[in-house]
Length: 312
Ligand SMILES: O=C(O)CCC(=O)C(=O)O
Image (cartoon, rainbow, N blue to C red; front, side, top):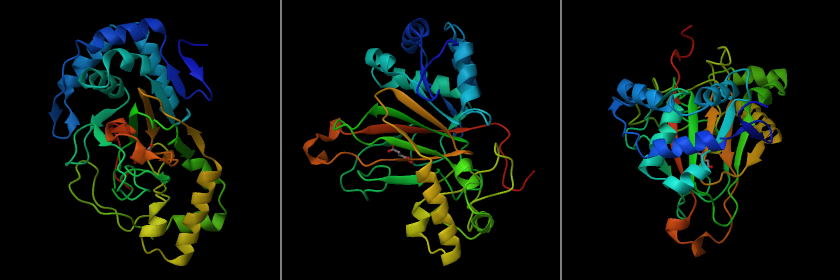
């Protein structure tokens, strides 16, 4: 085995003691970041890279993480930073460390102008249960499905799991789900016949894409499987195209993997290949104090070289 201790399907990264200890020390000295426009500034990235370089085994750890997230790797990973969170808490110091690690994967940016770099996704008992802040089943989706340049990666950092023990994360390999479809459904999904959601106060995600095809002809590391289950209930799709998308939704569920994020776990998903969602939280959330309810923080990443659909 390499330097990483893998659980399960090689998607969980547990840091050995030595780098973990060094990261805890680093957390108390890392400076805050600046943004250039909506992107983490070059100066912050350079500073973070220089600081991380002093952490034992960091090069090997980052290489393994990049391999997991690449087109030939699994396509998602969970970096377990729980022991670091136990010492540093989950405030500014911890977020600087998490940001520094993510900056090694791709460039952190803030596509939603109305939210900060780390966007809170808490638990709102009054929200539509299917929303990310709701308490119900959050069906498979990718983020910014209706943008010509969705973020390449999306990251969910667990600050507090559901204290009642539910709310497992679900992920599914969208490319494999597509490969199990009938040829006629696949053909329908290449039609620009799908639409979902609004498009406002966004930055650096291209233009609104409406209507869009679910499948494009780009290579896997550039194209997307533009899917959100919400378009099946919230957009007016014609019947044949809706049926093809339903077949895809069924295959995504058939191939799903689930795991429950713990405090300090950071899920990184390659949006070119995987969709994600969440199982319902446990009943009884009214009995949990608001400050103890499940809370995730979300951050988006942009790879260099990402292009508009059809630009190659
Ligand atoms: O609550 C979760 O675990 C998933 C949330 C999500 O997918 C989202 O915020 O888009």
